[in-house]
Image 1 (spheres, rainbow, N blue to C red):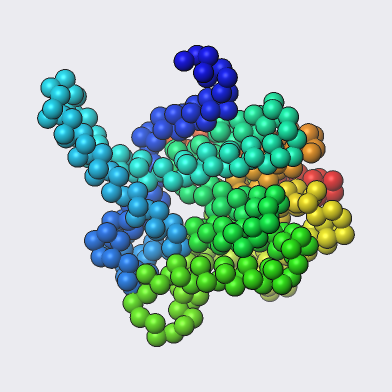
Image 2 (cartoon, rainbow, N blue to C red; image 1 turned 60 degrees about the vertical axis):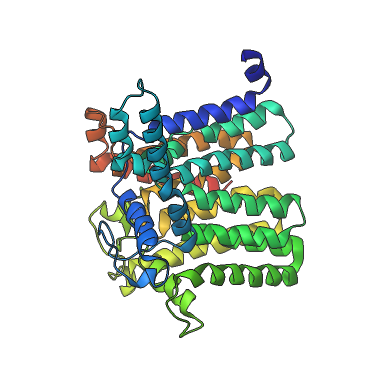
Length: 423
């Protein structure tokens, strides 16, 4: 057995990464995961039709469901796993006298149910590690580099804290986006690539931050006409995913209305920052200022966020358009995602993991970026822990709540963005 694992280092890495995450599933779960649980339960009990228009049977952070269809499908599929495991445990308990009967009570608990709904994000973590390995293998062919790239995701605390501990699903859209990029980089399957990108959006709208660089690269490689074909197929998949949730077809635009009003508009709390260590912390800390409040020149914080992020995005796109787009693709994607996290309003702390895989992949060709990947991964973990301090670590936990500390980390984030932008 030892010889087998020594010869299959990569498999060992993935098994260790999986086992480590499984061991964390039952430690605790965030308040938000209650929404995932109740949405899955309501889908099973009420059905899909009119789901976005009916108030949830249990209210936690939001009255109505505000996640896109694919997320809800995943919650729906994994919800019965809890019941299945409970039935199997009962059969074993009856058949084998030595089986610890008290384990049944733990399996029946809400903590165990929450753990089963963390599994999609856990598998997405592994998927991100795998696709990063494939990118590295195609790019370098160096076995040690390939394994290191994989390990930097599998054993990255920011990722397993977000998925296996907290129970958030931010890794899933990242996985779909990476698969879509892999397909257009190393194959001619541009239609399938478009489908995977849409799946990312249908999991969580955070996938949108990668869209500008993706579109530019797509068009440069496959021409505008093929992008239009992929976009049309993507719109069809998008539309199709909402059909089970419709009560009627009174308006052909209903799926787009649901997405804009019930999902995009209701996705985040309406503040300039929702726990993210970004530019707005430097100005107001975590005061809870709504992003619709007028700021400079009587323009709201929200539109200043759009303007600043748009300005940097256009600048980055212009630079890679004039150069070899494939060479700078990952670094540009990282910068755009990082700019979105730093300058858009309503950003949550967990969105700090969005730029990380792209910075890691950019480091394959520029080894100097590895140290910044490690630094930003550490800051991401601190940002996540600041909003959800589990487990409590005494003085260290308290230290993170000092305004001077959060200001310093946020300032470093902004400074690092400009430093890397100039590279």
